[in-house]
Image (cartoon, rainbow over all chains, first blue to last red):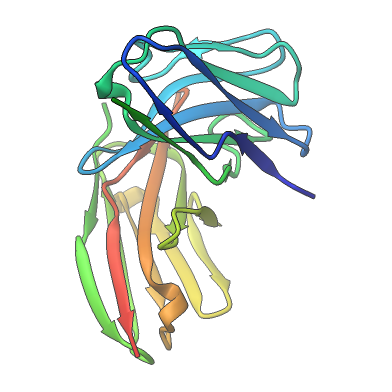
Length: 113
Length: 109
């Protein structure tokens, strides 16, 4: 099993450009999450989803949008990228909300110039 | 929100040595998880441990929820144990995990 797969792994954007990160999981998990990891700030939750068709804001949602049209996919969008969004992004999934064991993807490194 | 503090922040070990990492949290929690982030950035779930003790090979973890701390033991450390260890907790009624800043571990041969 692939587990949690993120694409792309690396991306460089110019300020103002848009892009979408795709997360796919093959474990039939209900819950999916997007985190960003920054030096000195640790892992912070951007948005999460408790099931197909649902999304909710995390700690740092501004500047991001998400969609969960299919249970296995969770998309993270940046409509107008800013240098402050330079980060490593991790997708994760769990079978039970928060109380469940969390499985992470390999991460996507995004640089905004 | 809930505060998660990990100590020590940095640790250098000689291969074969044992060590203990600590995670303190400021409120009652539903659950606690330990993760290892290897030098290539991959995050792996080590333990899902709301209370009690669990063992997985050379690693073991103990959570004392009533005293608001958890310990991760690394025995006979190997260079592959290098990386950052994160503790994460979820508070009852909350919908998210709060992560600590991590323990940076370097194991030298």
